[in-house]
Amino acid sequence: MKGNTIKLKTQNIFAYILVVLSFLALSVPIWLKVDYLPVRLWDEARNAVNAIEMLESGDLIVRTFNNEPETYNLKPPLLTWMQIASLSAVGINELAIRLPSVLASIGSLVLVFAFVYSETKKPAFGILAIGILATSSGFYGEHVGRFGDHDALLVFFCCLLLFAYWQYLKSQKPKWLYITGLAVCLGILTKSISILLFGPALLLYLIFSKNFLPLFKNKHFYLSSLLAIIPVFIYYFIREKMQPGFLSLVWNDELFPRYLNTSKNLSFSEESFWYYFKLWPTHFAMWVYLLPIIIPAYFLSKKKGVYHFLLLSSALFLIIISKGTKNFWYDAPIFPLLALLVTFSVYDTSRFVVKNQFVQIAMIWGILYFPYKASYQDTLNTQETYYNWETYGISYYLKHPELRKNLNSNTKILLDDNYGFEPHLFYVKKLEKEEGFALNRKWINQVNVGDTLLITHLSTYDALKKNFKTETLDSLNDYTKRVVLH
Image (cartoon, rainbow, N blue to C red; front, side, top):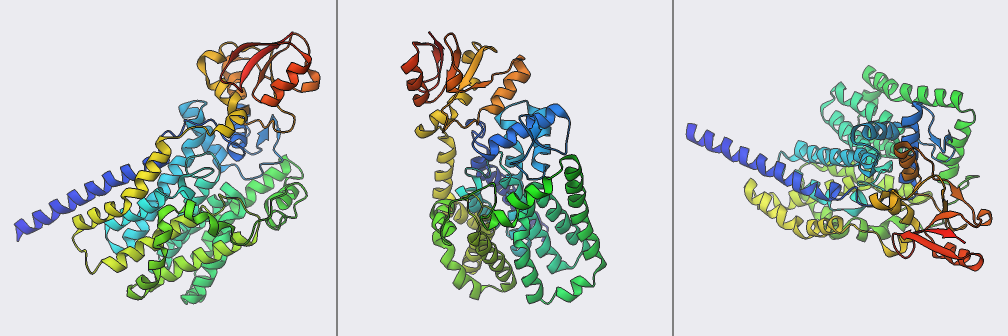
């Protein structure tokens, strides 16, 4: 009997070692070569400038851009605060801007694992959920898991909200109400009301599960609600005092006018209701083909409540975002839910056949092999696309240690008047902070003989050649070069 107990404990230790090693391997697409690409348009580049300016000014309330109060990026500053801490810890670079998102994405993987384990007590299936999420480009791809936008942090708080809410409904323990309130609070301080898009589903499930009246009789519900509301109210109150008119901007450009595409300052392309569904074959990769097994798995499952909760949350969130303005990364919070649904479906359709945990891990790695290989290769081969070299050329130039040495305050940046976006401003700020001089922008109608210009658009180079003799002093490639005018 004692020998069997020791053998069982040994097997469990080996199983958990396999789980940890699997987690480390599956997290690779989140962080591999994460600092290779320069900061990206639009939000990441804007966030990076907000962070470095907030670090310099010490004003932790009002975001600024070009040292003026921010009127475009109106989201609360939780991500900026985290990026400031990261800049202070690892220096002024891409890793610092993206590290909060990477850590948040890893946190989302942990929460997905915890959700599955709490329902199945099978760590192998927790690994499957992690693998599905980590290999979905809608989770780790552009604007989300590997980049310094708000969405990776938002996804984490959405996962925390749903996990804590579900645990409360199961256990009725007050601590989960407080964690739910904390998740809502931090989610709002990350990306405004985005996390509240799950509210209708949570309310309907509360009624469906007959928990509505007990919750509203619970004093902890009101205390946790205050926990969620008061810090948000304090932030917006202080921000409006420090930046008069801020709340009006938030209403117009962050809330319902933006959702309905009636904002006075922002305009979004009109897309069909099915926009996000069409993205799934890319965003959810091979896993989209496993979604149909949810139907038989539901009837085989002994725990239909978790299916009701996840399906309702997924469906209503998807309907809400599909009715409003659209961007290809707005569906990011749905992928943890889809990963959970597929995982529970595989579990409920295989648990009668595969019971040994080592066989389960082997089976799951067999399922994960091709999706993992594809996502690993995707991140391993991270490189600039040919059509972006003009957009990001100056960023690469300013990152280049040898080329950067040739710059001084007499060098001006000249961009195309129509397509001259400025994702390189973070690197200009970095240069100013580290080298002590500013690299200012100049317009085509302001250039004169003797000017030294850093250019990155072929159209700009062609326009200069019509009126000046241009001498190339050095170059990064055919697009990006430093020239002097004669």
